[in-house]
Image (spheres, rainbow over the protein chains, first blue to last red):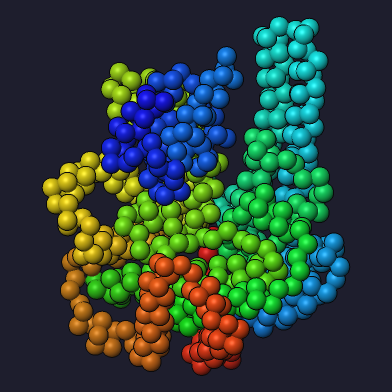
Length: 77
Length: 525
């Protein structure tokens, strides 16, 4: 989780990612950010995020995003 | 059937009572029949194209469903008898079959749309290159095809991704595809929300009916008092670039911004209001777009459903596709910054080229789309600069002055790009735009110039009043919807507001004999 928070903070240093739950709905993460974020997550966690999982509910909070990464990693195993 | 027509009002006046008087379980069938009347009224050819879309998407989604079921059963049976590699091979075979069906269905549906949108243009191009008579000059878009194709293909892709189940009843899919208010100018809707709501039973609710009437009346107000009035001047300005240049173009930018807003949002107000009258909630397509502080923000608040469609079905899938990942990896030697930007840049430019192409076959739309993409990418790249600026001047960034400046800057920028929408050629659009900086002719504008555009001073005064009302209401909307507040004050007050809206439309609207109620601008896309 800490690794993910570092990536997110690097993208938007001004945001408190531990508490924010409206990253997409609140306009903090735009589509541009989401693609950059996915590229960095895939590099860091060695997972492939499929297009069908790129929906606001998975990207609205760091917690939800981490749950998605964990789920994909488990499926790959 | 135009929204601003007596035929449409009569259609609605018959539909609503019939819809609520029949047993609830057959409400959706009544709605389907009325949709069929609406579609056939617009032309039988359009009805044929729509039937092809419904039949092909229904067949494809049912096939996906069957293949998913067979895949699950086959893989379950193979679990103990076959290796992981063999199971993976079987899964890939099923995936391949589904992909083939998907591609065939996409080619068919986008093929129809492409032929109707670009057929005439390709015919002229071919005649220019190879001689002979240009083919396809009779091809024209049929009612709502750009909108229902996107909505229905969205459903097709959702079933393909297994995020929504396939609908078993083809008539229910036909109902979703042909829902008449959406055929005029969208919005692009999703089957899992609007499709499901259309077939659910709906009881009559007087309050909801009144609230919906307010929204419909407000839509007509914007369309008939502001949009149709300003459209006369905008058309006159665009038609003669050799006469109207210099400061006329600045005026054209502002008039077109107001006209397009009143026209498109007015039409969507009517659409959403009609849906609400029938108990069906339709997605919002706008969120006070002219208060955006950047072009990216503006595109999240204007024609929201088209942007969401492109994001969901083109931008994200393309950005994370295997070729894009490979390209990103191949560019790593130029640094992480470059390799991470490659998918974003390519996908952004492609989506904007497609957005431009969706709007029309003219080259001006393609250039408009690409310029939007370039501006968005440039502003993304400038973000660190903005951050440094705001860090240096923290109070300025938060001030009302700076926010106002950012809003005006955005409106001027998007209005400048929209100049491409006004002219037939890119050359005319660019030369008209740049003439603003080379010709100072405000004198000509106000010495009778504005009176030569088909509007009287009274018309300008009424349009200006309309724009000020729209602006004031948008400001009030920051604290929530105005309709809710009106409705809270009771039925008598709400009816009074409705009567004021209707009264002002009757007094100041452009309708009736001598006026030609125009179709919505977005209906041509």
